[in-house]
Amino acid sequence: MKRIAIIDYGLGNLRSVLRGLERAGAAVLITADADVIASADGIVLPGVGAFREGMEMLGDLKATVLACSRQTPVLGICLGMQMLMESSEEHGIHQGLGLVPGHVRRFPAVPGCKVPHMGWNTICIEQQDPLFEGLAQEEYVYFVHSYYVPAAPEYTVTSTEYICPFASSIRNGMVYGVQFHPEKSGTVGLALLQNFIEML
Amino acid sequence: MQPSATIMISCLPLFCMVLTKRIIPCLDLKEGRVVKGTHFVELRDAGDPVELAQRYNDQGADEVVFLDITASHENRGTIVDVIERAADQLFLPLTVGGGIRSLSDMQQILRAGADKVSINTSAVEDPSLISRGAERFGTQCIVVAVDVRRNFDMAAGGTPVAHPDGRESWYEVVTYGGRRPTGIDAILWSQEAEERGAGEILLTSMETDGTKAGFDIPITAAVSDAVGIPVIASGGVGHLEHFYEGFAEGRADACLAASIFHYGEFTVRQAKEYLAARGIPVRL
Image (tube, rainbow over all chains, first blue to last red; front, side, top):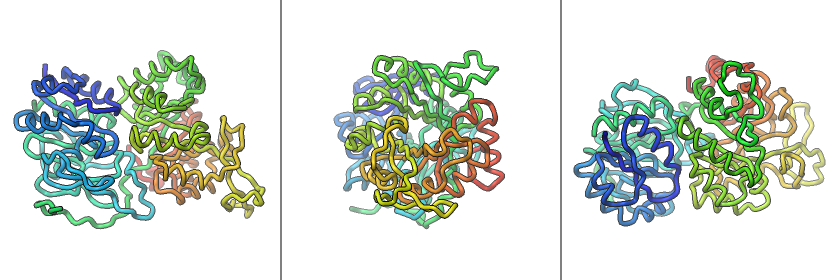
């Protein structure tokens, strides 16, 4: 059975991520222990809240994630995906992990378009990837975020449009990020988690 | 800062038509059991909120709200148990409201597996609860429930809202389940909630709640236009057309309903098929 470490660096609701991965057939641990993370077959970087606080809470585990990402698949979810980037402009400019080139931006204010982008929106597959194996070209998934990663052709796996087109999932080598919440996206999200486990 | 070496796809302003409008069934819980909704004859345990929520999930509900009407600290463990079971089985967003008065209440509910907490009376009595909650758990976690009632005494000085019959009123925030008027203007309060870090407004008009005559459109539209965060319309759905009005005329981002679904009059899917046929973007 594949072992997955969900990095526990704060408060967010990790229970659904845990159960979603378990349902997909993995042994899952929520942990802040660097050795446990280093010995896992896959790493999930979850995230709810603000960028700077998230990076601060990650603390010493930053080095662990950076080291592991060379040989272990990593899946960042929501803020976890944003933290994979080089930087974010959320409440000032803050450094991210820099595992994927690009910068996190705030949605511009457009009359009639509410921020946060909250609810079910469509992801459109830009490049075939095992993470989206078996899913349709367009699927609905659940988003909650006010900041986004601009779509860059090399790293964008799926794109979504809200106010502007953005990267709803990214990949750089074995490092994946999804802006939406697979653990809140019903059967589509569970299929994605299953795909992640199968690539380990 | 150096721009990324990658070529950015140009960021053209687009209308956000693709984000679908949400349909949210609300379950009232008392001591961990569903108060209404026992008309689902085929359920094994009609009073089990998790089984009912699962049913709504299967029908295509976009989120589920649990409202704990027991809301006493003695029964806290019961709702926590329900949330834990729901989070283990449901893979869609869950909001929990009722009796949440402190950061530790929020933490307990979120840790159990809820994605958002809804606060109402406690936020009016101590608005800093919104800011503190948003700072600690993130803006997206904090739903501010605003219960309102019309007040035709314009001398009292609220924001005027025009009604279809030509009259004008302002809307006053009410607390304790609608029993206590506060003198607070609903539109200004919604804006303050947004400034303090609310991620969403759940707007319930006591004028229409329980009437099955449709949402209170004038205040729904006014609040939706006054804030930059999503607004959930609540109170008064008796027919599918009311959902359409809530979105098209009330400009709501989501519609919440209870009895229309609980008593099996319509399924969530029927509501969404109806809306899709009338041109409202929904997830089917």
